[in-house]
Length: 621
Image 1 (tube, rainbow, N blue to C red):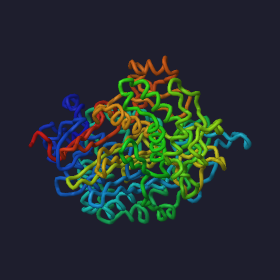
Image 2 (cartoon, one colour; image 1 turned 30 degrees about the vertical axis):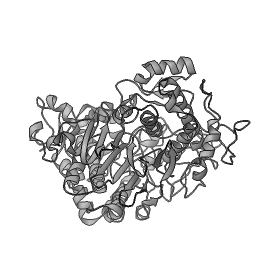
Image 3 (spheres, rainbow, N blue to C red; image 1 turned 180 degrees about the vertical axis):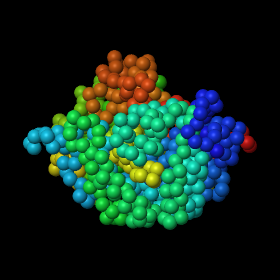
Image 4 (spheres, rainbow, N blue to C red; image 1 turned 180 degrees about the horizontal axis):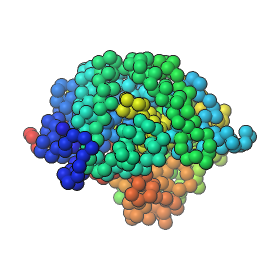
């Protein structure tokens, strides 16, 4: 029986349409897992644990695990695996991510770095057009870089699930994967978001036979209202559950991944849009992969302890530095002057992004000054650069981490404002009845990843290696190097107040992830919005570029117009209307109330709307 999940918006249309496989279920006869939570809601309040994702099937999978006695980690893996089925263009076992965990028993936040790595044979000119001059190398167009075996990093998601369950879980992987297997086998109802994402990638998917077969049935995107099944992925999950993730990194699946990457159709003709060069990954690269235990980043912002992801992600350092800059200003006292608060947010973002570009990369290869970037004294010095009444000319200069807390007489050299990350990813937030919390961001990079499906396995491989700077420079912390993890902006964040969870949040969106998390925190803490409104509010993203990328609703709002006329900010729309690029992020969050309830919040409209659920809704009390 097909799962309706977040596809409920398509049910009416589906009743009048044929389906690709199986039979369409009505909402009343949906899988028991969804029970009274079957209706997709962006907000839920209650007890016993909560979840927020972009997809109702994924949220329902987490709730099922929680109701069976599993903890937040078990439920997070179940939700992530289900997103690999229903959100295959954003996440899956062909990618990687960052896992942040609050252990209620120990009162401690820990993290796992499950970022993809470059193969040992990764050349520094991997994405350079060979026809360009040697002294002035020119990269292939991004779409060609991304649609290639060369773009595929060694996946980290299966290793992340295994490590998280080993450290903190109460179930084994087979049990955690059961809900996702059911959804993959039974199918889900295609909605407009899934159809649009498929259509936007049709030319990228077409060169790869396995991708065409799975995602372009009959040569076209699946129609809204049809049922999409993925029996190959269901079987892959069964193998991982019963035999372990060694099957992925050492067994037959590893060999198939390598064969797919190295033998993917390719063209080095710059005039051919897709695909790009074949890859160089080996089975040794997969066998050598490790998900890394890491300490989180930490800053204190107005009495809240904010924990994030340390490098190789730039999320924790950039969000943390921006908060340290903003700490200098009494923004809550300015809450009635929203444009002024948002002006400071945009300016602090630009400064933190300047430092991100100059200093942050994989710490196994680059000496990243994480402690200095997160020092409140450095933040105070950087705050000197903000004119409270006028936007600075962008890009702004990077700061000097040999700081003394005194306002500098002149700025340092301008930082490179280039940005290689694309807009897609997915995020989930889970809590349980014991007070444990998981914030997990996972991805295959851009929408559709590399476009390459491993034949017979049902999952798309990532294109994460395009997150490296394509033109090699010895001074660039994000330069291509074998075995290295490309810099990421994923920013899973857990905030504590007096040692207890206050809010957990994260988002997809490439480098706009950082600004989405930051803006949501400013909305909640400084502007006093509730978490639902803080998440839903129109977004703007200043990443140290001449123009601020913003959703049209932000540009058109009175405060957006005020920011342009009064402060001199220049805005450009985030993307063309009707495309997935028009929206910034698709965030999730959970807030923990003083009375013991939790509020799960998801997007009301972005990416088709998210799904917030709780184990026991308040109205059951």
